[in-house]
Length: 263
Image (tube, rainbow, N blue to C red; front, side, top):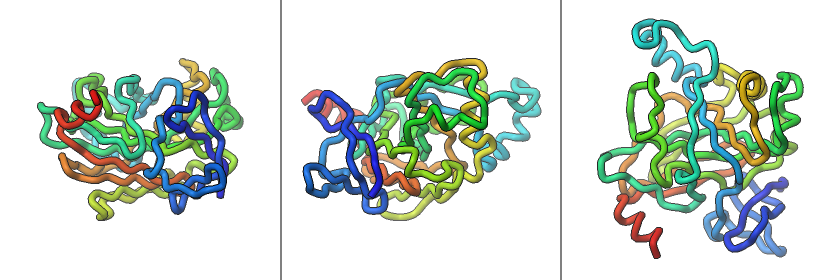
């Protein structure tokens, strides 16, 4: 059992509790519950920032394109984007498949959650600003361009399932040595490791805070591995990150999702 922070629906504040990341259970009032047996809200309060091309395999996929227009050369700094508040979703929530899309791409991402303001941070003390780690499904409509911000593809309602909790950073010895697995309908479809990050977590924090500030509650997605799974309505997705737990969601048609949201 390790310490974690979670947001129970109807409760005004973040709750601290013991969780079992292997079995994805939490102890509340002396009883054990699976994460999908209780209604948990998104356990963060700030902005979600994503990073493109920070896995070696994904970078190699685009390397040749980056040598030609409009890119002309590889990026020298992290490529950032924002997942705005409308994209927030919960563990166990449904992911909407928009009417103008036939498939979605599931982005298994380690989320680094900040506990205090971080600006001009050094690599050596970067993790001092982190309160813990969570799982984020960086959902997007499949697309190829990295030249312009893919707002229409990444910023749809419900496109950021997050949770089920934030694991205390003390429970994770090294965020750069975590296994990541994705299952679709019970079948393993993706397996990777944060050891394949081009910029390790500490370096990424240092590079980004050189030109911008993170605030308490903000979340930094360290990247999405190559060969992100493609799903459609009716599929069930489970993202597991070693030491943190698993995030489970189902994909439904947008009109069905909206009916549920309006009830």
